[in-house]
Amino acid sequence: MNVFTALSEVALPQARAAAHAVAAIGGRTVQHADWVLSVQAWCAAFQKVQGTEVGLYFDDPLAFAAALWGAWHAGKTPVLASDLQPHTLAHLLPQVQATAGLLPGALQPDAAGAPAVVLQPLSLCDARVVLFTSGSTGVPERIVKQLSQLDAEVHALQAVFGPMAQAPGLRTLATVSHQHIYGLLFRVLWPLAAGRHLGTGFLRYPEELVTQLSQPGPAVLISSPAMLSRLPDALDWAAASQGLRGIFSSGGPLPPEASAHCLALLGHSPTEVFGSSETGGIAWRRRAEQGDAWQPLPGVQVRLADSGCLSVRSGHLPDADAWWETADRALPQDGGAGFVLQGRADRIVKIAEKRISLTAMETTLLASDWVAAARAVVLEAPPAADRVGMVLALSDAGWQALQQRGRRGLGAALRAMLEPCVDRVALPRSWRYVLRMPQNAQGKTTQHDLLALFRPLMPQPLWTERGDLRATATLQVDPGLRVLDGHFPGAPIVPGVAQLHWVVTLGTQAFGIPAAFMRAEVVKFQQPILPGTSVQVQLQWVPDKGQLQFSLTSHRGPHASGRLVQGGAA
Image 1 (tube, rainbow, N blue to C red):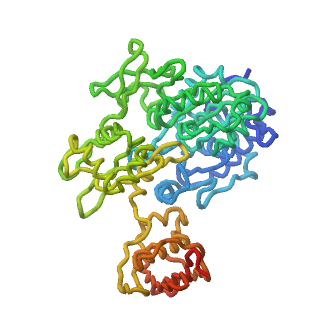
Image 2 (image 1 turned 120 degrees about the vertical axis):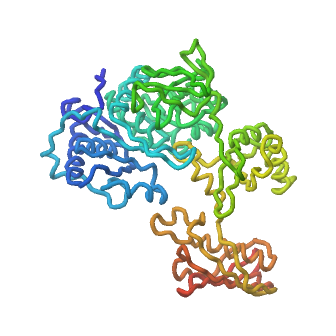
Image 3 (image 1 turned 180 degrees about the vertical axis):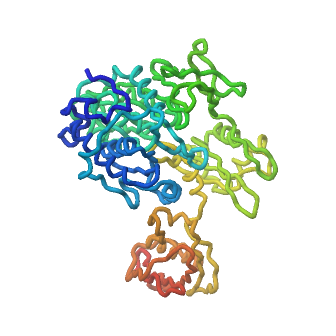
């Protein structure tokens, strides 16, 4: 049986036998001695960096772990990027003095300097890592974690769940990223401290999950409500679950029906872990055994604050002796030892000088048979007053109501539901209807993704000519257009497919023709359209050929031209 090792000593050569396997990749094992050499190479590279903070983003958790410990042993503070989205990089890069992995300007490990690096035990108090909250309640916040906090947490996980995860050769399969606190703990820190294989297998789809679970040998699954809520019945879960030892879920609430579905498909009730980036792990439960009640993790104390919200004290917090009040309402259970969550505390905002509860608005709409999920956001519109936008994941009945009533009619009916509890001046003016809430890799619905739903896909046209067969419009390409997101990081341009979408939209507006185009002909994209450009779109409708001819130009010259042909046209 492997000896549990403090995180401060995991990367020391003497922490494990040289041949001890820290990971298995594609049928080969990576030995502790080889991984330590990688840590030394990263340490040598980071020792040359002027400054204290280094940004890390890796797809490969094994390489990530080597860079993480290499940074710590070099006396640096790793700053973990949540993803590679442009807004994330714009926020992260000014904070760090160097980067590694897939980040711009990334350093490479110094293999030549590795032999000269002598690794000593880390200080649990001085070694730190910086993570960011998911942004589910606003702008992602910077969270600094001491190694002592992370070490206390992996000890708590081992105390409760260690027996489940001690099978020889146990594989850690994951559907969540190691760049966030949950994946960091369960895929990297805990396995390395416990002497198990760290979680190199990352799975994006249920089909991949079935394939990996069907491989011989025991496994645990580190997942999220987003994945566990959409496991299809049609796959061969019976064969896949033979070696499964347990399922972990965190990052958000797992619906009771999803928990029951997992138990039926995989033979395990998911172990849910409740906590946050700020608090670390707080409590756990398995619905099949404990129902709705949560049990605190070892070393975690809980009580109710006067506000009715849960307060926590533990070694997972910056001050192990201070009480931390969360924004989660709770009721005590089991004589105060456990608790049942009662939802988030009210989110109060001021709209038109009125104090408005976004939580109350969401709760009211969730009582309707039309609504499966609801999220309210504040849309800032300077110089005009802020307003509320509402994103609704509609139920089947909701989609039927939308089809029958139309967007205007459904919006009016929903506003009528809110009028008894919300001042009229603060009623939502903008509605977005979706199949499901947008979720990131952690299964979180972020403010950024919600607000993106309210950003336009194309500029508002300024028509300078609008005849029966010819039309001209000017489009001012605002940098905030949604089509610019991720295309490309650091150098946004309007995608070609978006330009064609603009042409179709303007053609239907100008000439009243259906958007039934079957093909594009002689299309040329001469030069990119950049944010801030004023683009002239010239359209000519040729009805006998079913052709919409177009050109996009600016002061820089031609950008695109061609023709779109409707179905049935020769």
